[in-house]
Length: 384
Image 1 (spheres, helix red, strand yellow):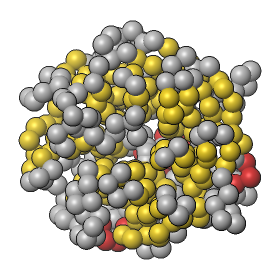
Image 2: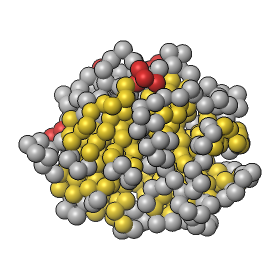
Image 3: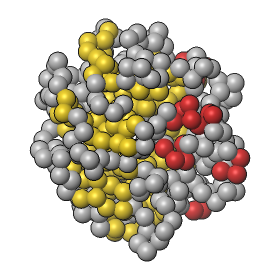
Image 4: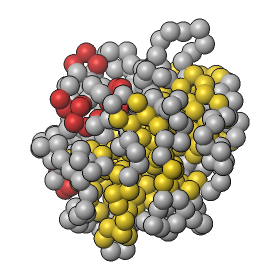
C-alpha cells in the first residue's frame, strides 16, 4: 500500500473495492530515507476537503512551521513529494497530472508547473513517482498509461517514453508505480491489477529493469521482468549497506493470502530472493516502509478495522516489535528519516493530525503531533 498521500487511500481502497483507489492515489538524490549529514528543512504536502498546500518545518527541534506556503493557489489534493539536486518536486496525481518544481529557498513561487500528459492528448496520465538520473533527466511513472515518461525534471521538456505495454495483464494496463535507481539501472514496479474486477491483485506483479544510459528494458536471463512472489507492490526502498531493494507487497489486503509481505530484489542477480517476511508476521497488511539500516526499519500496518499502526522490525533477524505508541489510528500514508535518523510519521488521525517524530534508538516519541494546517500527506527533507 507505496507509495504516501492518498487521502485515506487504504481505507478508501477497501471500501471502494480493495485496490480501486490505488489507481488514483498510489502512495521516494530522493532523500525519503535520510536527509544527509546536516539538519535539513522539512517540506510537507498537505490535503483536506479537496484542496492541498505545502507546509515547511524548521531545521531543528522543537519544530516551527510555515503553513499554506503556496497561498490561495495551493496544490492538488492528491500529491506526493520528491527532491533532487536541491530542488523539490511535487507530483500531482490523477486530476492534475502535473509536476510542480520548487526552489526551497523561495518555496512560495514555483519555478515550473508542467504536465505529465502526452502532448496533445486529453488522456490523464496519473503520475505516481519520479526517479532522477541527473538535473536534466528523470523518469516519471504514469499509472494510467503504459509508457514511462522521460523528462528534463526542471523544465518539464519531454525527452521520450519507454513502452511497457508488453507487460500488461488482460485489462491492458500495467499500473506502473514505484521506482529506484541502483548502479545506473532503473527498477520499476508494475502492479498489474485487474481493473475489470475492482483493481484486485489477481495477476503476478513485476519489476522491470531499464538501463538509464540506453533507456532499454533489460533481458534478465530468459525474461524481461522480475516476477515477484508477492503481489501489488506498494513501497520500494534501496538500502546501500546490504545492496538490496526491499519491496512491500500489499497482496489482496488480507493476511489470508500468500502475496503480502516484504520481498527482496537482489541487484547482483537481477532476481527476487522471495518474500522473506509475510504480512502475517506484522499482524496485518503492509503499507509504506522506512529503512535506516538492517537493524532499524519501520512498516505501516493496518488491522481489520482499518486502524493504522507503525511497527518496528529488523531486516537482519526478521524480528517484529510492538507498534509505536503515540500515533493516531487514522491513515498513515508516509514516513521518512531525517539527517539524525529520527523517524517522521505522517499521521492523518481524524481528530488530531500532524507530524509525529520518534527516536529510532528508543522508539519513543520526541515531538508531535506537529500541526501542518491541512492534514499531512507526505514529507521529505532538503538542504537548500
